[in-house]
Amino acid sequence: MGTKKTSLYQLHQDCNAKFVEFAGYHMPIQYSEGIVEEHKFTRNHSGIFDVSHMGQLFIYGSDELIKDLEKIFPLDLKNLKLNHSKYSFLMDKDAGIQDDLIITKIDEGFLIILNAACKDNDFKILKELLKEKYKMVLDENRSLIAIQGPKSSQILNEVVDGVKDLNFMSGNWFLFDNQKVYITRSGYTGEDGFEISILNNYADKLTRELINKGSKLAGLGARDTLRLEAGLCLYGHDLDKDKTPVEANLKWAISKERISKGDFIGSDIIIKQLNDGVSKIRVGIKPEGRIIAREKTKIFNQSDVHIGEITSGTFGPSVNGPVAMGYVENEFSKKNTKVFLEVRGKKYAANICSLPFYKKSYVKGVNQ
Amino acid sequence: MSEVKYSKEHEWIKLEGDVATIGITKHATEMLGDIVFAELPEKGSNVEKDGTAGVVESTKAASDVYTPVSGEVVDTNQEIVDDPSKINQDPENSAWFFKLKIKDKSEMDSLMNKDDYDKFAKENNT
Image (cartoon, rainbow over all chains, first blue to last red; front, side):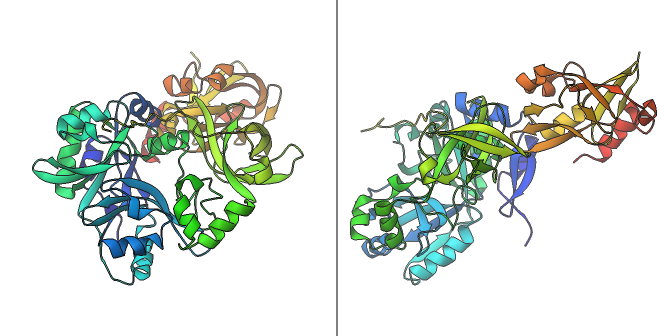
């Protein structure tokens, strides 16, 4: 099977994209203005990201499906309101993270957005766990377009009337060109923004209209620097099968009600780790100078003992300095703990810090 | 005017007397993208032809900077360390990397002139 193209491929080419292969797709890493400009334009105005490589899994069903999904995800799904979204994970029995995802309650069931590299495996796992009781569609006919940044609400509302009234982490069906599009107020940049699920044939037209209204395409490069400044995890780097949600410092995403029941996959380990603590934990790491510590950089304590590793690290254009996150032994995870990062054979000072590096500006409660 | 020569590793080198000024080419900066970090050799240190003499990093990755000739580092450009974006803005002029007191001028002979380098860069556009 060859490398796939998204329905915006022609548009990417028209905008002089540099392509990389990512999870089996030709994806734009950047356009002619470059990662730093695309990053800053998204923070200050509005950036458009083609994330059509991500999985859009529709699972159809009602009360029984809710019960079955609660055995899989650590979420209080029976109390999840229609068109509301939650961040969650697919775990194995040891609570290792197989994927992180956003699940939204829709009329006919649930829509789950999955990572591109994991989606086929997730589909297999979920199909088995749900014993093929429900209709499941990993929809290849829909594109996913994210528009992010402070001007996005105004720009998207000019093209799709009514979206400005959505609340953060909620969605609804809207019309574009007389076609139903499902839009959620969410994203992966730390900015206010939206993700638009739209039929492939209409994705190019929608995106060109958003560009005409003043938004600009931004590539996967800017998406990575934006999400890292926002302290958000990237699966395959900050999260994987060897890490649990508690170790990943994501226990906020686990429903307390579901922990008290303890009946989901991986719940034994999660409960044990919540009670006894964990030996390693994800933290933010801020190098003191300009040195960039990338993934796999070793972390040492002040006595030169190896205490962890960086899982993501780059230069943050809005922070105007290097930013990183990684896992350290729990006793060194306190804010302002001094650590050392080994880059090209030399050790550089850094500090454990709280996340995000860049303050989020999600819009909450516009319509409550 | 002194002649500027070019290496296959995309450095430029300008010789004035026995002091060579070295930087990276515009083509190199276009391939790298936004440069956000630069590390230079220490003043007073000796570098060997084709050895590493610095590092540049973009938001995406780190790349070594090589020296096309041997010599003693007599000066380094702190301005590009303080503001690496200057390398993207003016790579073949004010954003030079380091100056060498060179040992052997004949090391310059194997380097390319502008026309040859432009052709080489076009053919090796990766």
